[in-house]
Length: 108
Image (cartoon, rainbow, N blue to C red):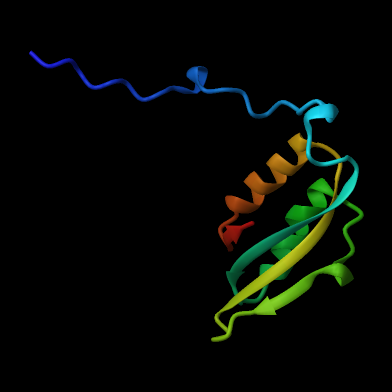
């Protein structure tokens, strides 16, 4: 009789990536300006939605600093927002929140 397939890992088996990396091990010095690219359909409210999410994590984010790049066909809009990163946890949560927003297609 063949061995049963291995069980997939459960949350308790996975490493905890939510902790801050010690400053001496981080490639980022905090605080620092950190650009994030966000892409979605070019529709009314997309930029405002991204700005609202980003401001939850960086209330000082100035909308005038957002870079906009429409796709060649005009269907999509790429935004580059530059937040003041204060910790790895802050960046992880910002990426997670943006990635799960219904208007956002990609976060880089």
